[in-house]
View (spheres, helix red, strand yellow):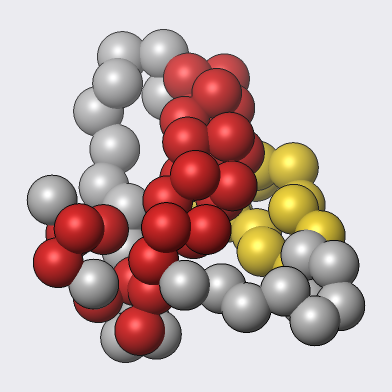
Length: 67
C-alpha cells in the first residue's frame, strides 16, 4: 500500500506501508499525518494556507483524526 498527497503546488513524497500493516486511526495519525504530511506541507504552502481532503476510510473519519 502507498499513501500520497498531490496539490496544485506539487506533491508530498510517497509513504510506503509495509505489507500486513493495519491502518487504524492511531497509525494513520502518527505515521502518515504527523510523520509524512506535516513535515513536508510547508514546502508546498509556506503561508500555511491549505485544505486537506480525505475519503471516508475508517482511519480518516475517526473522531480523533478529525480533531
